[in-house]
Length: 368
Image (cartoon, rainbow, N blue to C red; front, side, top):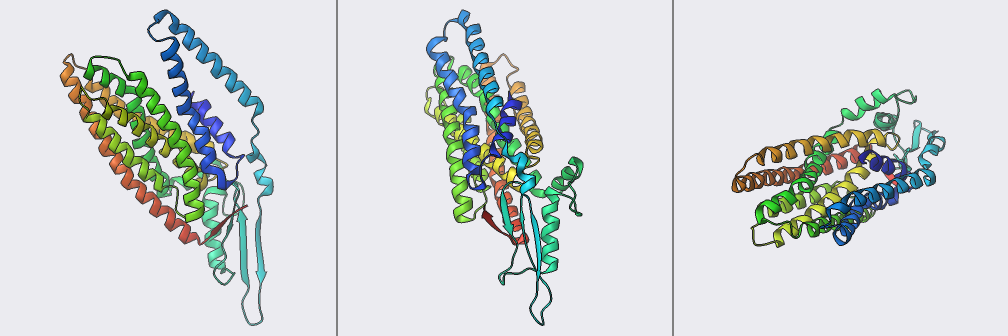
């Protein structure tokens, strides 16, 4: 299911212009949280408390998923396949009497951005042009203009600190979201001795997820295009919200459900914010042509973060003493809160790197 989910993201976002990338990512990713809210509501209203009806619920969910996937495969048009034919690289020599040749260059990236690298006087030196070409080739081609192999591409992006900064952020944040999904219900059940309210927590998480993805997607477009601020500021916001939400869950009391509901909404919003941000950043920073490859790499980051945190949670629950189990899970949740506080700080590092890269390239991005 994750493979189909991410494949649909890779194929669809190429059909939207750069000025709408945040909204496209947010809208597509919101289906992940929205579907959970939909199916949880259907289950609660028609299947809860009827064990014999459970197979019918899963069968119906499978049918719906199959129909949607087949319909998407038939209707999907991936416009990115034609981008290479549109790519252009123009280098023009102009000179005035008594002056050396002046190079003026522009290049349309495969993700639809034209990058003008001209200086304040309208021109650019040969050294600047070569620096720009080398940096551009790092994610789009070899130095001699030939298409790079996958291995050359991987070596190029692996040498960029930003690649691993985002990797760590994704591991901490999305790993925490998967921890919440797997353990918040069990923790609440052991803490309160009842399953009452668990479906409400799932719906709250799902709705927070939807609005987080849609809101952050739209807001990231505005922040980047209108205020020239990198989308990575939303990684810091998401990490901070994750930290506060997990701290609320860790400190929740048996008789009060408000902190657990706050955690559900907060984790949903934070996960939505981070998801719609990192995917757009990766596509912009490391190229659209191998966006699918990068999604696979960052899915591995999610698996690492989830594996570590859920592994700790599994070890914490290996006891017959319920109070000890509660205390152990609280400790794991506090650890997740600390990890996400660090992720928020690392998000600031990502913002600084993006600003420095943009300044070093000296380009002005114009949406075509």
